[in-house]
Image (cartoon, rainbow, N blue to C red; front, top):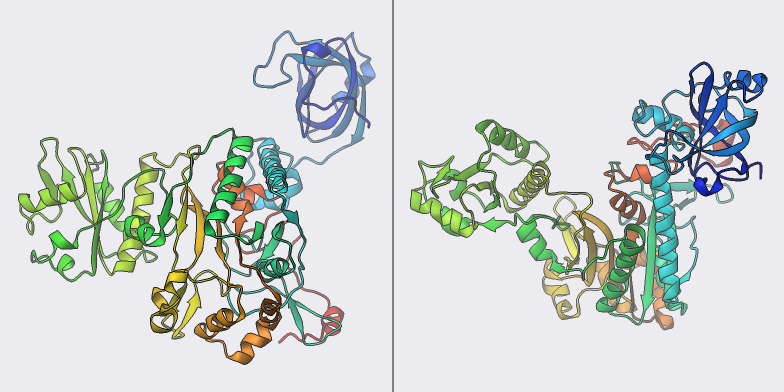
Length: 581
């Protein structure tokens, strides 16, 4: 290589050695008789020193032509620095430059290549190859690399085999929208890009590959947000001859391994919570359990008090916010506006402060006696200095609004520390959810999820009450993985398709290959898929998965750097038998 060392490895033990470094100019500092260059590569920064009278004048003249991001090769002797920099691993040494070669000059970059850059999101995405030079972004991708390597090491140690599945597959009507790919050789027909390798990994179980995994790209044509991209990466896994307990133990082990090796954190045994309890106590199926503030249903002791809002509500539910009684009326008004936003739809917010003397002051004092309000404090375990927040309405809306309010209070009170991790399993999801608009059931997870055996008899009489043999892993309020025990017998799979509104012909057309495979000795099997990008962002303490993807799309699904998607030539459209309106 052109270099003998990287810009991050030289130390005092290297003093006196002649070395050659290569990299990019981070900055130069010219003090007249003395010139310093900070040279950067992927591994770190090393200071180069040029002193008049010590080095040839033409080398100093050449150094004064350098601009930010010039690519150079530097040869010199390692010296101990007089003024050390304890913020750099290489801060005890510097290089007394002897020779300098400009390998490639550079235009002035459109933003600073530093951790605290002056570039906005769109500008950095347009010049993503420059953004990737910043150490903060590079560290994110290094963490992703470690996560990927450790995932493979752990699963390989358990005799999993990594198998690649097809990228050009068949479009199916269930789930999110597919990205479709026209076939030139089959005019008028289309492939789809996989939303997951679900059916292929089940077929691998039929094939006898009893432990499969794949770190795989998946594609969904969905509206985007911070934790979604049109293409994303999954740790996709499937096992044969297992039950739910086997899968939970195996992949709890994987996550513990990643925390231990990548973050140096020992994670205790993951608690388990049913879907019903998650909805009852936290208002959603991915509860953030870093802090308490659990819901308390209040209907039994607040209705029939001539307060119309409560008397007409399907659900009255509250939380106790410890130590927040000092909240001002202005702050409570802000919280009220927060829950009244259209996406939450609450009609208002009721509050009660527990004063230092134990008395309770509420926004509904004229409807409730002091004794009534003491019932509130008892039910919610509120103490002097606490603030009770209550929402009433339909069950779904009240839970959703209070769930978001709980998270908001957790944020305001500093209870959602990104360096604290609270993982858990959520179990026993509903198998089906009913869509009022289409007047039919949809699979809560996917059509291949097995019902819990004890609920089989409800499939005909009360499908909405059937629980799925399904499970999600949740960390800090984020669903990072989900899976299920699969259906492995053709009659039950056909029964499921009928529940979902498929005709026999539609089921055969879409999934006949899988139904046929089940007749050739399909073993009991189940699996899980982790959102790898989400896992990386959690481990890295970031809100957006984009920070952990080398070349992400923006919130409109566009790649700003290569300007994609883009129109294609008419000749290509003709070849594909596509006519645009």
